[in-house]
Amino acid sequence: MLLFSIALYIYNARHHKDAYFAHYKEFGIDLPENFQIHGIDVSHHQGKINWPMVKSMESQQVKIGFVFIKATEGYSLVDKSFTDNWFQAGLAGIPRGAYHFFIAGKSGALQAGNFIRHVPKEQGTLPPVIDIEQRYGVAPALFRKELQIMLDTLEHYYKQRPIIYTYASFYNDYLAGHFDDYPLWVAHYFELKSPRIHRDWLFWQHSEKGHVYGIKRLVDFNVFDGDSSDFKKLVQPLAEN
Image (tube, rainbow, N blue to C red):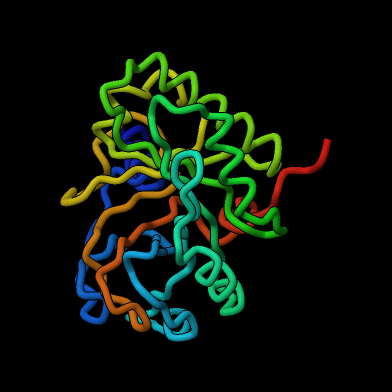
């Protein structure tokens, strides 16, 4: 029984069952302590960003280890800051990935085309992300079909398994059991231990009120569920067939 209890404790510790938070004054928020790699996500809402300042910021040995940048939305919208953010973040040496805001009910193929037209296929970037947060009254079966089409299209083009971003509640209500083999970036704020979701997750967006040097407005904070070796593997594109 003692050995079982120890094994269970180790398992829980390794699978983010208990994320202990501590306050980081410079970032202005509490951060979960038992994760090595912290990052942010941005769009034009953050305004003009000084990426060298973002890169240089450090608080209690925590630095910004990655950034997800909004690229596109729907059929044709392109975030007005994407090109600059993508180039400057890369120039600063911050690992980066791009995300698309998915509009339920619209063609997954056309939305994938919008993303592909504007997001470069580069070595060493994070996998593409599809952000789905609302169903806009569309039947779940219909938007799941179009979401699957977009996932398949992006994976074929970028040779990386796309990541799904959504809120814990939305995943539990509409996606669970259908996309469980895709990496998940889950948004769940005000949780003291971990997101309330019954599956593994890759990234956890735990706050939307962070402060970062070089960014004038509040920014979302995230953690990566893995160590530096796991992260390095993630940013390597899949081999060509």
